[in-house]
Length: 465
Image 1 (cartoon, rainbow, N blue to C red):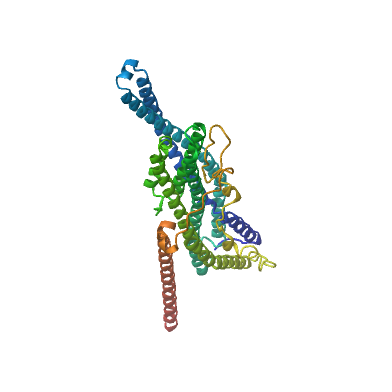
Image 2: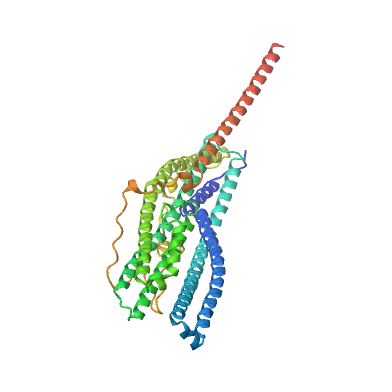
C-alpha cells in the first residue's frame, strides 16, 4: 500500500485529466505522425522530380541542338528537297517544343512541391510540441496513480475500465486520423475537379480563336496547361494522403495519360484532330474525377463519420465511469490515511464527464480550410500575369458539373481494414487481455481460499489436540 494520500494529489490528478482532454481533443499525437509522414513523402517526391528535371534539361538542350543543326544546312541542301526539309524541320521543332514544355511542367511541379513541403513541415513542427506534452502528461498520470495505489490497480473495475477505454481510444484515434486524411484529400480532389472543369472549358474556347491571334491562343493554351498541371499535382497529393486506398477512378495510369497529354498540349493546339483527341482526354478525366469526389463523399458520410459517432458514444460512458471510479478510489485512499475529504465529493467529475464525447470530431481548422498544411496546388500565372484562381472570374460561366452517378452505380466502399487499419485485432487483443486478467484474479482468489482453508484446518487441528 502507498504512503500518505492527500487532497492535493486528487486535485493534481484532476488537473492532469483536464489538460489531457484538451490535447486529446486535438488528436495531437496522431496528427503529428500524419503531418510528419506527409512532409517526408513530399520530400522524397521532390528528390525524384529534381532528378527528372535534370534529365529533361539535358533532353531540351539536345532537341534545341537538333533544330539548330537543320537550320544551319546550306541553301543548296534546302532546295534539293524543300518539302522534305520542311517536314524534317517541323518534326524537330515539335520535338523541341514538347521537350521545353515537359521541362517547364517539371519545373512548375518542383516549385509547387517545395512550397507544399515547407507548409507541411511547418504544420508538423507546430503540433510536435503539444504531442510531446501529451506524452509527458500520460507519464505523470501513470506515475501519480501508481504512487496512490501502491503500484497496483485501484480496483478490478478500474483495471477493466482502463483497458476498455484504451482500446476505444485507439480505435477512435484511428478513425479520427482516417477522417482527417479523407477530409484533407477531399479538399485537394475538389480543387482538381474545378481545375479540370476549367481546362475543358478553356480548351473548347480555343477553337473560336483564329490562328492569326497567336498570342491569345498561346495564353489560353498555357492557362489550360497550368490548370492541368495543378489538377495532376492535386490528384497525386490526394493519393499520397490515402496511400493504402485503391481509387476506383483516376487511377495512377489515368493520371499518367493526362500528364502525357499535357506534355503535348502546344502541338495539340495547332491541329484540329489532335485538339479533339486532347479534349476527349481532358473531359473523360474531369468526369471520372467528379465521380471520385462523389465516392469520397459517400465514404466519408456513410462509413467514417458513422463509425466516428458510434465509437464516440461508446467511449463517452466508459471514460466517465473510469474517471469516477478513480476519483472514488483516491478519496477512499485519503480517508484511509486520515486525510480530509470534505468538499471533495464531486470535485473531479465537473468538466470531465463529457470529455471523450468532445474529443476531436475532426473538423478541419480554419487554417487547414485555407489550404495551409494540406498542400493544395493552384495554377501558375500566365505570361507574368497575376496568380490565376481555379476558374477565371472573367470569360464565360464555368462548365456545369457532370451529372452525379446513382449510389448503386458508384464503386464499392473500401473495407474497414483499408480505412482504419486492423481494428478487429485491437478488439481481439482487448478481449484476450481481459480474459487473462480474470484468470489471474481467479487463480489468486483460489490461492487465498486455499490458504484460508489450510489455516482453518490448522486451527481445528490445534483445538482437537
